Length: 286
Image: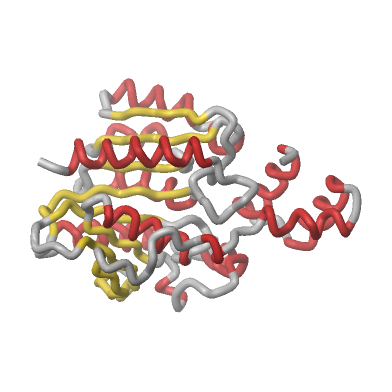
């Protein structure tokens, strides 16, 4: 797909472009209203393709639960293998469209890898993730950022003390959630491993506060996010942080999301997932 169209969609999804302006510019890029409408299904996320692991998979225990956060109870999706043995915990942080079927599926994938997985709904203080993904995106922007970080720190504390975990906790986040995964690495010592997928970097001055190991996944075509890599990597090296950084050439922002036909890159997604599981196993399983 034309990269100008992908960049336009990034502005719409990630930076809050008005939908009317987005459609107007998409019409210009594609040569007409009919062409623009034909492109929309490829650009939008399809929940119909979200379930790669059945919600009723007999190998898993899954449920929704509430845990105490800074702003009150936080709703979360919980998944773990049907086993009595203790497992490390992993927080799964959603994109800027809330806790949706795709992220719940990723949570089940993580559980099948041998981790007790918890996916909090960052929009819990606003009544939870709405069905309309554009509405969810708009609500994400209204969240109190400091309070949101504290709500996810509370998730780490919940998993750390859960009777079915070993007390070791990791975090994996995507897009908006990738930026939050970076912030958790900075702001809490309750996690031992953090895996941001194409996430906004923390301030270089905050990097020395990081105590967890980092695995950083970036998309080669993601110009907006990649601008922050040089300063981040320089700060990581200067502070002696345990990190690995991988760049996936030819991949777009959100390449791991298999519900987006225009962005999903199966080669990059599968390799990044393999590296993620190896990394979390190395850092969390004693």
